[in-house]
Structures are given as C-alpha cells and as structure tokens.
Image 1 (tube, rainbow, N blue to C red):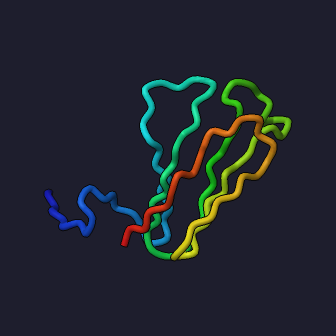
Image 2: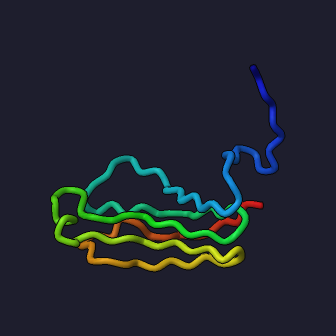
Image 3: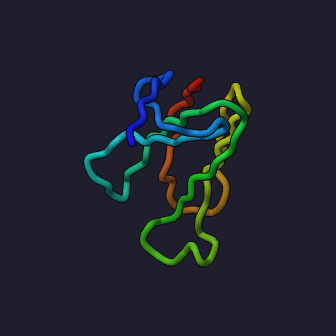
Length: 100
C-alpha cells in the first residue's frame, strides 16, 4: 500500500495539534561542556513539555540532583523555566517556531 500526502510545510513531520517538538542543533561530538541549542517547534494549540537534565555520569539523580527545563506554549508565545537541582545545564532554548 502506498499513500501520498501534500504537506503544508515541506519536510514537516506528522504531529498532532498541541505538540512541542524540541530540535537541537547537531554537534560533532559531546563533551562535558556541551550545551544543546534547542529550537522548539510549536504545532497548533497550547502545550507543555519537559526536557530532563542530570550529570549523565552518576547516580546523583537518585538523591534529587536532576532537573527539568519546562517548556510552555500558550498558542502564541513560548516560555521556559529551569526547575530542580541539576548541577549541569544541558539545554539552551534558542528560539520558538510556530508551525501552522
């Protein structure tokens, strides 16, 4: 079986309305200093999403040493908040893109 679709945005994935899709700029390698530059694609209605952060090496998360970057989209504007006790910041929110 084969199906063909005309997408409103070329290369757009199939996602539901109210979806946040965090996309990172590709990096050549990952080191201790790597911080992922994130652009959040926002599809349709209001939505929220959380990106998890920890040191990536130990079991310190078991003692509460972790955090989240909470992404909130109200349908027009995006906001982010860093919560928790992670010793490492893995993500930097570079921008928001509205996809109709």
